[in-house]
Length: 62
Ligand SMILES: [Zn+2]
Picture 1 (cartoon, rainbow, N blue to C red):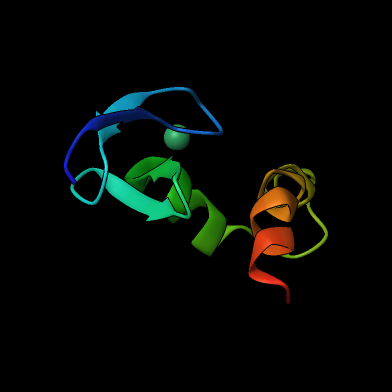
Picture 2: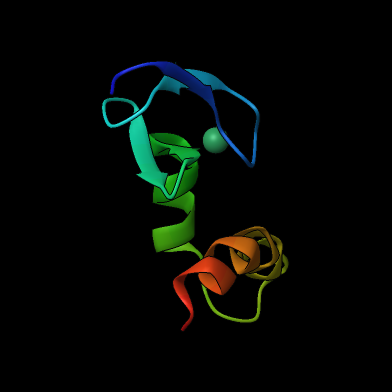
């Protein structure tokens, strides 16, 4: 389970579970993961990332 995947945000290619995180098949590179963690609430970036995650959260049912 170490195939190359494209980040759902920046489309950068990376190895899932090595260069980032993989949530239900959606790869997020370490750069975008770090941005999400450091992004403050209510900023434009926050909205951008949350919108991208909505489809994932919908699958999680929470
Ligand atoms: Zn990325």
